[in-house]
Image 1 (cartoon, one colour):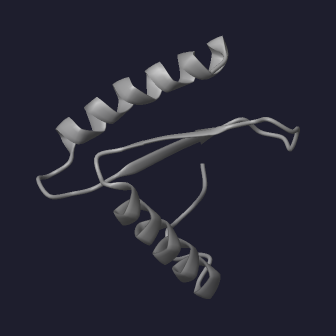
Image 2: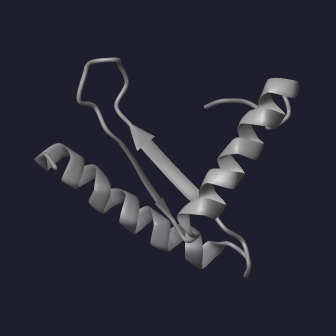
Length: 77
């Protein structure tokens, strides 16, 4: 992991603790971060309070719902 990736990972961990503290009980979350661009070797980082399979299932559901209705989840930032 590069120094820049480690810095991003450390920040994701801090943000994840804050999210977990602010969400109601029994809510799962996943937060992804990635560098823009399509150069080889770029990594996507993610943190979650859920097991990997639950996150993958949620991502699949998110993608399916967005394919069906791109405006379903509001505006991009």
